[in-house]
Image (cartoon, rainbow, N blue to C red; front, side, top):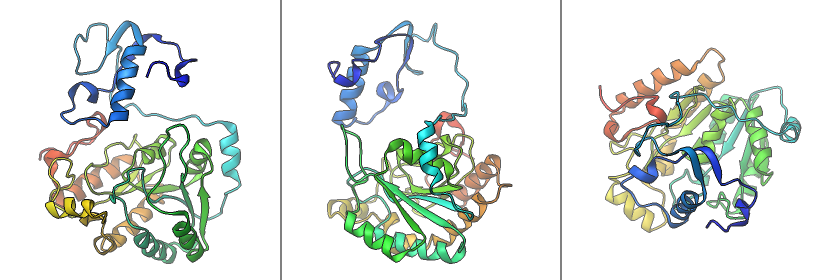
Length: 310
């Protein structure tokens, strides 16, 4: 709460305090730790001129806001120096295999092995950098899905796969910034890649659409499930799979293998400097609509990409 040591050096009073709009408009319950964070922030921070969210009146005196503004993270020099040791003359491809959710909603490790074999064959000059976090610190999330022994086996099977696990947050970002592209399923950490100017190739699926690209080229290898994104209507079979700690259908290795050619295509596009953000948006819209996915459930940050109708 507001007595947390992490707040001791953070000033409580600001000109403006802008709240995550989901706090005031989301129909879904927040996780207890996330709700505790927002409750503490609301009690601790005070805005002299204005405090609120975009959908929370009053809006008088709210700060001016330009939609879809491009963000660029500034990294410490030490992070860039760390990443320099991983330089390579060929394509440099970062990999994040999973996010921090304990549910089996990410590609299984056996699929990553198959995908890497295909990528190595298609891009023999490439080097791959495997990153993640296997231990938590001070409540930070971890990449829990794969035991360290299993990761070691994967690394042993792929000589061009470099172990960059547990290198520290800023060093991870330095590494991603130095990569030519970043491959990851839907996870909040992957959203940082476009904030570093690094294209993101998303292994899309499960509950949420990929909705943040920061005016940076991207490619989404989409599932074919007509319920995707299934944040309010997941198949009963997938719900049962979650209860059994089995991958949901769109993350089942057999279904993911059918997407490997699309992943290869995405890498080809993102390694081409002529492939622009506008072209990525056009192609995403085209692929999304052609797949017959659940357009009414789609959203994007600041409405940057609209697929809800048409």
